[in-house]
Amino acid sequence: MKIAIACEDKRVSQHFGYCEGFMIYDVKEGNIEDKKFVENPGHRPGFLPNFLKEGGVDIIIADGMGSNAQTIFDKNGIEVVVGAQGLCDDVIEKYIKGQLKSTESICHEHYLDQK
Image (cartoon, rainbow, N blue to C red; front, top):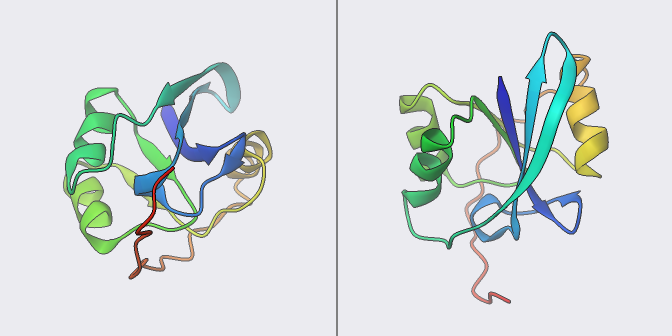
């Protein structure tokens, strides 16, 4: 399975849509077989969930995410885990071990400033 973590400088990004990019982990039988960084192609409403689906992502992990993105991921059969914080490599290990649970919170504010 492919698990994407919205990240900023190796840490989970506070907001999915405005993240620097996605650390994509290829996980098989509880082991990380590969990981790669994919740059965020840009925030546009509804674009990123479909972009990640086309990349074969099964699970998305972030700190904050808006309701529209969560709905699109759900419609695409992609599991959403929100409320994650810390280093991406630590977060993926927690997820694999079943120690990471989604807060299921919805982000209602969006950043007005981008880099």
